Image (tube, rainbow, N blue to C red):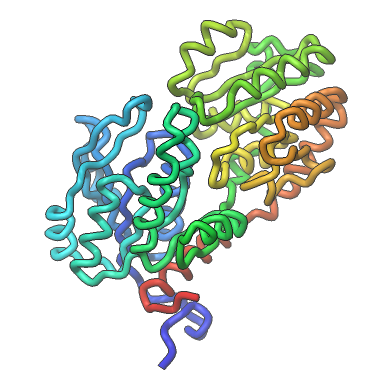
Amino acid sequence: MPGMTLENIPQSRPRRLRIGIVTETWPPEINGVALTIARWVEGLRQRGHDVQLVRVQQSHGDAPGSADALDTLRLPGFRIPGYPQLQGGWPAQRTLLEHWRRTRPDLIHVVTEGPLGYSALRAARRLAIPASTSFHTNFDGYSRHYHLGWLARPIRAYLRHFHNQGIQTLVPTAELAKQLQTFGFQHTQVLARGVDTALFSPHRRDASLRQQWGAAPQTPVVLYVGRLAAEKNLDLVIAAFQAIRHIQPAARLALVGDGPLAARLRARHPDFAHCGMRQGVDLATHYASADLFLFPSLTETFGNVVLEALASGLAVAAFDYAAAHAHVEPGESGWLAPFGDAETFLAQATALAKDVAALRRMGETARQAMLQVDSERIYDRLETLFVNAMTGEIS
């Protein structure tokens, strides 16, 4: 008898599942992984599934809320060196075995590859519970930005070992799936990313915020959103903005985010708008109040911020991979430089800023394209992948 899939259940949704999700990052931490997983959890719960969240306790005040709150097991963690805003989770196999014996999930999904995630995979194997993983962060690529390039190969070997213990590894693009397959990762499954086009919208443009940045109505505002850290290639943002200022002397640069480089950037560039960490409507307002989004990172598995910028009506300058490759239409909603070609990135960013009217028309095109990226379809696909993993229907 064939296994249960969404396709062969006539006129009904799959049965209600109990899904255990293990992550070492979670809101209010602000990063792409935490925000993505929070959206997945919400999408699954809206479809009637039970979610058991296992995560790191974030503070002494991080306690259970109302009776209707998400079923959450909070475990001890440690601060990650260089990233005081983030934590890792200690190994917890014994605790997880006890927890899952009491309330056994149908499926366990492990989000992060730290000690907590590894012990979750071991516990799932001991209990014979199907387990899947997702690949969100190029840790092997990060190593060279912290003078640890010699660790890239062993880190990749560990990640391969980690993910190959699961029944599937979810990745955001076919491009990344092929790359990981060449490194020996097995059973990759593509789960695209969506964007909340109601939250991220040009309608949130705020003239008073632009005035705070020192921008007149026709002044081009250049925006960067993300961690202020070495692996994000921020020197290229600054170089691009300096080139833009040669042709648009009044142009302004707004930096949204926090990280190890924040204090240094404030000291060296007091003329930039240093906006700090933003979230929700406040973040969406910052996006919509700019005109050009620069995304110079070379270490992304996806880059949710690219979709958020496009949905907010911004033209994008980025390298041709990950989210930008999938969603930026060159000459229509931005420009893409060949991967790692900083000179072309600079030239394209400057060309975009030259004509503000054309730049904003590109932003309108970007917005229209993002209206087709429906988060509900993404959640449907996630549900299908989890059901198939539980029943063994893996392609």
